[in-house]
Length: 255
Image (cartoon, rainbow, N blue to C red; front, side, top):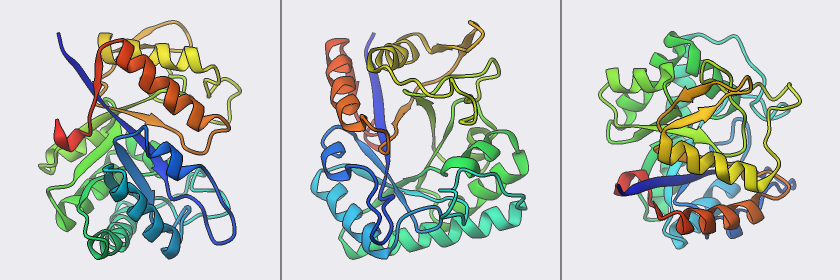
């Protein structure tokens, strides 16, 4: 049986004088880039540079819209309506689309960021607002959402192609959601453990939850966090492990 998976990374999250991540180096190892659109991180200059870097590395480009919370990096929940979610996503997709067009590229996907992503994984109204926004702006865009989530279901209802996402460096709850970052064991910091989790998710379509339960998932795309201390080392390690396991790495749009 042939196995194939996309590797995506959240990039373009620097802002002004503040530099975050090692975008140029990580782009050598991923196949999809989720570029911040200025609300939770990023600014016009960072967006333009990151789009150019992605194109130069032949990496698919996606918008990474988040909540308007630079101070909290978009990781704090906000009480927004479905209509507000719609507006936020339309605005941010449009901002990045301008830079992608100006640089001669094509936008391929949308992946909500942080708290917006996690809220939409459970809240059907918010998920519908996000999916509806994408469908209105460009129905050819692929919606990345947590495997089995309300966001993936919303994308399908709106006629979008969806990519079910799993996380290399996050632990899971028994219901298939991610362990909140506020909990001590939310992150997997051991590269070998994280890589082994990815192999299991791709090959067996399951992940072990914190309480030892085998949770059914679908791994179309794997997220690598670009802001981790050892993000570059892990990205290189994971590509090597996937190659050794006979798993092809390819962008979702090319599958």
